[in-house]
Length: 398
Image (cartoon, one colour):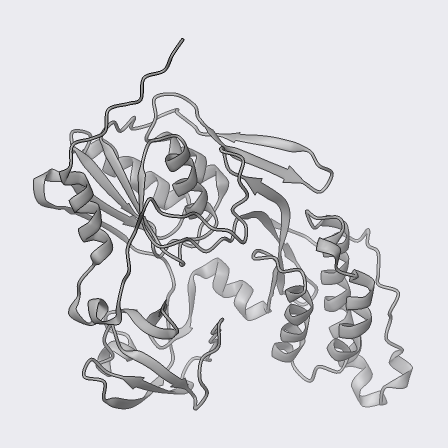
């Protein structure tokens, strides 16, 4: 949901005196501070945690407003704003530049054509987009990234090249040889994929990369088409989440009754239980395995947690991201957006997933050698699990 910034606003007490700046900088500084104040105010009034996790929000304004005022360009301004938001330790509160806001809505942006995953302390190429600059240059899954434009990657690499911009990468290839590649960024789709395959013994593999209207309809259609399949494997390892409406419908596909999907807690302390939707459900009755890793976030984590807590699925892979809060997008002056957390989430069994993640039932280690060889140990573990007879439901005393 995208909401317009409200005119009813409070402002930090740490206003920057524009007259103290050179006359040539005052116009930009005033524009910068309109964006900064809008972000500060929205967090101050709407963040789900009224005490902002003990952060002195007025002091944060005093520290970062002067830096925002003198930011020479949009990228520096938004970097300063996000530095301030980092003190909240909130996975879903982040400011997007106007360009990033457009990319979010269009699912397109300039990129070089590969995605990364963390294996131990290394960043490794996970997927290469067909016909992308990376694919044409021969970049392959399993290559270890050494540097990006001469700089080693940090814990949260964030690349936003412009179309046509040359980006220098240094890798260790599949033979551990140094490879330097310069790629020109090209506007490519960032939309997730939908993959379906029938594996041995009729087991159906389903991958979808977002919880939205398109993907939840696709999931329902696939489950109806494979209603007699003995088991399905749902791959959420590249799924960063999505909207809770699609999530509730997707969970409902695996039940013949409404189930508890957890509770959202607002700033005021109001608690709202989320339930699944059954209208039009596939009512899939076979066994279910869900694949997850640290790239599974938000709605993907809730999906895994609910099916696990309801005894409906076995979770395989690695611990999820621990990024589960209900957030909305607010438009900012100048065209940017603020994604802002407005509700906390508690899983059906009472645990908080934010910062904690969902632990798999079956933990699998994935190595760089697996990526290079095209092996998928998570999928192998899921299939081995499904070879064993299904456990009988536990008896319940009445």
